[in-house]
Image (cartoon, rainbow, N blue to C red):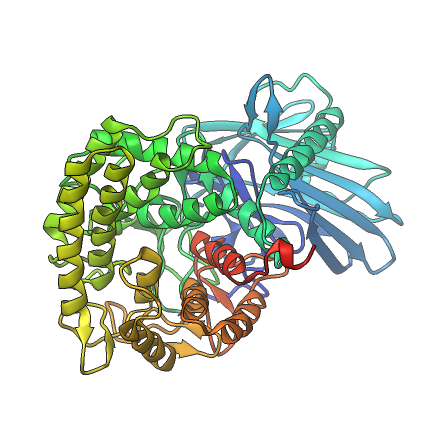
Length: 600
């Protein structure tokens, strides 16, 4: 399969916590799933080869004699502007967003995407290519036309695009010239009573106001404000507010590296990843997202026994995430396989118990929350804690979800320890001295076992697995979890070993040893941020700042990051936008930034 010319991850994300879409630098919408982000990609061009004007799965603006483009977000919003310039001095501005604002006492976030095209200069000529697909790119969506709309039929789904553009020009891909503007509203297959132009202007202003108001509530650091704001908005867009789920990313099957076969579907809620997202947003003061997520995991825990807590779930909380490979989409740059579902849901990953308890702990300590934690929730969490204490020395697939091997992973054991440690703190908070003593004794005994069995005298570092000798970047998180201070000589030695063996410039590999697919070729972005935080905690602040500055330069033109980077070429790889990576931006900025009192 030939590679798609010019295809890369220079993409912007728009959304409203109900639906989301990815837009490339020429204002083509190349990825959007309906009716929710883990649904059928009605715009699937991201995973298809470039066939020029005949390409499918795209909502594109084809400017005649396109010369250059510019792209930016409206200040402190999730509203994306792309300006297309032709070779004759003509230009148009394309504004893309998904409506989100407060109306009638609740948040209005419909299954809707809005596109506004405005003439900026000259007499630009362009066509609008609206070619959705269905059944994961296997078919073109069935289209019927009305006087001011096109209706499309997909997988158990009907939707429409209402517009004031020429319907015949849309159907024929015919070039048009505009005097002022064209409006498009993609949403449910229902009649839109207002004029498209009036509705779009109303949605645009309300959505702009919503995001700018939301940003004003964030407790951003004095340094790196723009970087943190963009990361926070992006994390927010990776949540599904209907249930409170937090997605690892918005895409499936972007390879971790060129031709690697490491293609995974990340459009689900990993309990581990979600904890880190919630923690980052909490540090900025965005507590509503945490409340929604805790509602999500409360339902999951209530429906599960302590012995069958999965590493990940569907956005609805459904346990069925069976993985399959598709023939209907060739893949990003023609590199497959394209997968739907994720086999990791069937794995044993014992860190999940710690992930849930760590996320829930703030409920018992944060007085801002409307519904704080109470005894009934604590008892429910204790059930998970007992499981964590029982399994922490048993083999699992680990945080990197190895498919062919199981070991007693140090990170999983540390997360299990953290579960028991936090239960002791919660019990003290609830004035339950007997339960506090019980969990403290459990945690202390586990800690001693972990620190003894994870230490490798041969490599002079904590190892990835008990009684092993391989390094793992996830162990940079041990001080963050509280297992030991970053100044502990054993951790300092581990930090030095990881810096020597896993680092490539400003980037870090998760590990260097071979796995189910051979030796990894791409660096995992969040590991670089973990390294920065570990350096700061260990007192190496200047070195940390230099590394952080280099990592920030890895972001695309809109300030977004995927999962992986090729250390040789600097290319972004992996699913996009990756929440782990955006969390890294926030956590490092908060740790490195000066205090406001030092500036004002």
